[in-house]
Length: 214
Figure (cartoon, rainbow, N blue to C red):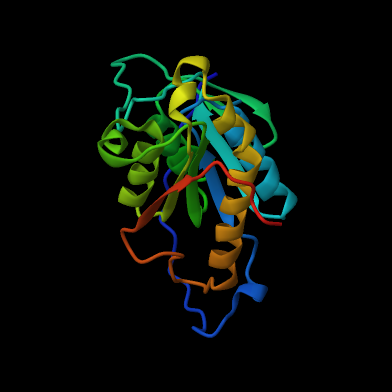
């Protein structure tokens, strides 16, 4: 399938600074993931946000692109393809950063998201590893384009590295619940015309392998 990117200039609208979150339209959120568009973490997060009534979209690579950092795909003269797998869910033939760009300039070009969430990643992203992380790289690209972002990753147990980190997958629902609590706090303070986080800010969250208190 082909896609085209449409750009439009939108006129400025003046609104009272006192408008509170309870009068706003649902928060628009773009979910991305370097683990792939049908990964457990991204799907669980999408469903949780959707169930809460947020205007959530998903744009993620067709398959696992972990460790690709901030890489973008350069295919001179070739088309980049995507497929729709469900309502407001798209698999994109590219890197996590490509998926962010597809979401911002394609899927949500008419009205950019209030927040980009990269994850929930099925493993940690800490220290120097963040430089190579597709999860963190996608969030960083969103911030670069003026959209606040969260990079959400799961902790791990060192002894499980060779067997696929099953505990990280086991606690993904708890990581999703924690992420949702952060989104709800940001939403409760949301004001028209103001960013959810200070300009140029993104948060990298590593959720430990513990049960989320509900």
